[in-house]
Length: 222
Image (cartoon, rainbow, N blue to C red; front, side, top):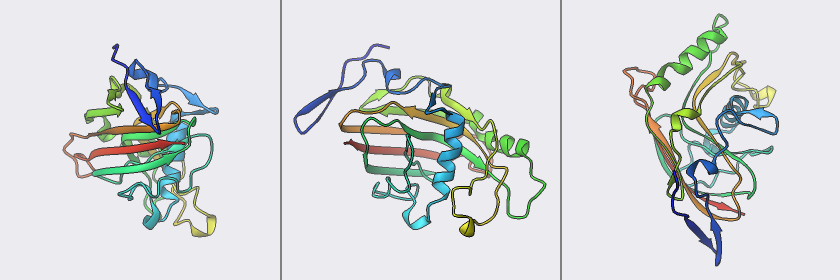
């Protein structure tokens, strides 16, 4: 859908945003630096679980910790654990793709559960995602259309704690699996942007069946 061009201004410099909403994301099924969205989703969870709670970007209410443990060609943005509503400010590198979940689920075995299979982890992670509603992604007020097209499930299981130093890992948590709605945002030029994303599940379940995500970032690309 053709939309009016929106202008973002920082320090008297004007940066045009895409005319078409879909232009600010990579299409579903894309890969960056040889990694698929499914692979990136596993890496995102390993990143999230490798950071102590006191500095976790997922628990951070201001965005002060958004740069913690970032590495590689893709910058990870956090949502929150469980139902979350956050307004954050984050300084990000310009010209680097951004990756984040709109809503998603993760399942991994409890300590000592050696009978848990990869198939069971994938099935458990998928349960709530069929019921996802009110999904939204907006960049400077421009909405991404049909967010449900961006659903991605783990194609291979992984160990959620793999990125933690071996001597500090709680245990080997293979097989872990995730399922949800993941966005790979195209690199942003220098400037300020407002990114909003979220949604909710609508399933009668004790396992986050009514989880809600409502996240807003002021992104400062430099």
